[in-house]
Length: 423
Image (tube, rainbow, N blue to C red; front, top):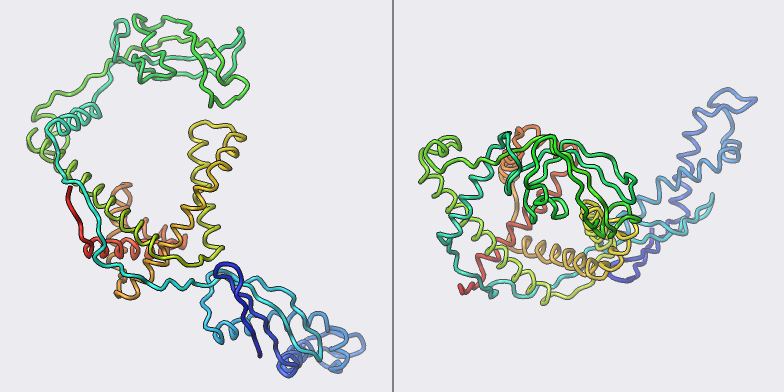
């Protein structure tokens, strides 16, 4: 076998590969002999037809089988000859083979880039001092109380802060333009309610009805109605009063703490942990920006395109959840294409930089670390560790998880090595 390598755009490589006549003939001979053993040829007993007749009758099948055997073997040999580690499946082109002749073909493949690591220790970064004010703690505590609020049906008119359980119909020019929504909870608050009209329900009691005019948003699912005024016919079925629990030891026991002081201390501790995590993320982002600016190298096109698709799909899902129309989503994706491509390139670039650092510093992830991560994930979703791990195994996700954990571990190493200034 002979091969030549040619550099293409980015990290793509093209291999021109030739397999000798002798090697091709040997494979043909083996294939034809195998066919002869079971071939049914009129006028001959099974397995007894002359080899020349088998070659003539089954030449097309033999050629295809020879391709299946020789092309992967020759491709693998060429990779080893040129020291190439492929990052994508090969694209085979111009496969040419015939009985009595050699096999020639080309293979295109993306390869790992040459990173040429620059200095990555003692990088400079800054972070804010982490403090939790009394006001922040109180606001967080009030939020926890509201989360545990109960909604009690009351026999009185709606007041600000209440919720009305309502049936809602939408009309335009006297015609219904959407399906009736039943038992919809509307908060009696201009800022928090649907299209800001919740406060207009003040004074209504259960079984009372009201028409409220409001302008439909520009991202309304049905574009022909977007931005136009509509009439919402609302029937109040129940009045729900929001009752926030008292901040006392009874509440503390309800949430699994000994007293209210313990609840407030844990809230303050969690706020501090969250702020510290945010500051660490800021430091990591500063380090990543420096790594990107220091390292310029060609990127595998196939990896960039895959990462770009991930970002585009994520953006599309976010727009769909906001109710954007299909044509608007496509227009937005076009506008975002340049920015998302740059983000995809940076993501791929950082992957290779961190991979090289991890290799140089012998940073690896063991099974215990993977299991610990899966246990935390399982607990957050109230699922068993066994079921969670089985899901990752059956869906081929463990490899990707190990790569991500190794990347995180490498970034943690760089943070430990960095010179961090506290503002």
